Image 1 (cartoon, rainbow, N blue to C red):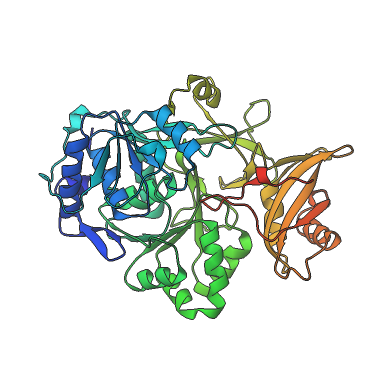
Image 2: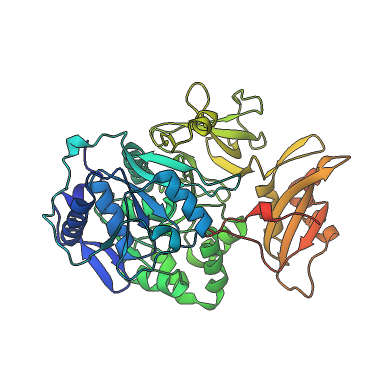
Length: 484
C-alpha cells in the first residue's frame, strides 16, 4: 500500500513536530522513527504510553511505519482499566519516554524507550507491499461507559481516507501549521492532531497543556489552524473580553475547529463577535473516525456538524431501524454510517462487533440527530443518555442545553430524563449558575426554554451544581448525574 506519510519517504528540512522547545524536521523524524521502527518490527501490537509529549508522536509514527498496530494508553487510566487493556490487547512491548515512570500493570511488560537522538536509515523499516490497507494501525479503547472498554481496531485504510477527506473539506495542505493542546491517546488529538499534519506534509505545534496565552503566541507566530474541544473554546470565549490580543490572534487563523462534543451556540456567537471567525464543528467517533464536517468553503452554521465527508454514507433511522426518507429540522433519528472510514471491529469481541453493524454494513452510532433538507446534520445527543421521550415527543437533550446556556444566569448546563408517571419521562436540568448566590429558578428557566424551543421541551426539574462531571475530553458524564 502507499505510505501514510509520503513526506517521510523523501524527507525535507521542513518542521514536522514541535512540543515546547523541542522540535523535529521531517528529515529528523524520518531518521528517529526509522530507528525506533526497526526495534518494533515484527510485533503484532505495541502499547504507547501516550503523554502529551514529542516521544508519543515519534512512537506512534514509528509503529505505523513498521507496519505494527499501536495501542495508545491514557496516562490517567486507573490500574484496573490498564490491566484490562493490556490483557485484552496483549502488546509485545510498551514504548515510553525515557523519564516516564510507568504504573504497576505495565512494569512486567518489556519496555522500549524513545531515543529522540537516535538515527536510523530514514527509510520505512518495512516494505509498503508487506502492509495492506486493511491491516490494523491503531487499537483505541472506548470509554467503557457500559462495561469494560472495548478495543476498536482501526485499519490503515480508515486513517488515510479520513485524513484525505478532511483535507478536501478543510482545504488542508502542507502549508498549514496546526496548533492544539489535546491529549494524544484519542482519535481527536492523535489521528487528527498529529497524524493529520504529517500526512499533509505540514507542521503541528503541540502546547503540552492548553492555555489561551499559548494559542495567542502560536497563532501570532504563523499557525493557521486551531483544534480544540468545547471546554477549551469556552475558556477562550470567557477570556476574550479581557484579552484583545487573543481575539486578534484568532482572527488571523484560517480555521478554528471544535470537536469531541457539541460546542454551545452561545460560545460560537461570542467567539464570532470578538474575532470575526466562525468555529466549525465536525462529528466522529472512535469506531468511525470522522463522518461529517462543516466545510471550509461552506456555511459555519452554529449547532450543526456540517455534511457527510467525501466517501461517507450517512442516514437516520427510526427506532425500528427503518430509514427516514424525508429530512426536516424536527425529525429525530439514530445516525448510521457506512464507508471506508470505519473500523474493522472490536478486538476479541465478535459479539459486540456483530451487534454494532446492520446486516447490510451500516454502523449503528447510537447518536441521535436531525438532518436539514440541505444535508446539514445537527446532533441532539446519545440514544442511551440524551434521547428523552416525554409526553409523546422524542426530544434531544442537546438543543435544551443550548437554550439553557443562552440564559445569562447559566454558566454550564446538562439535561437528562427521569421516569415520570404522567409524561413517561420528565426533562431534568443540571445547571452551574454564573452566581451561586442567585441561581436561576425552575420557573425562570422553564419559561426561558419554552420561549426559545417549545413548551413541551421545558425542564420540569432543576438541580444546581458547582460543576458538571466531565471526562478527559471535556464530555459531560451524564451517568454520574442522577436525582436522589
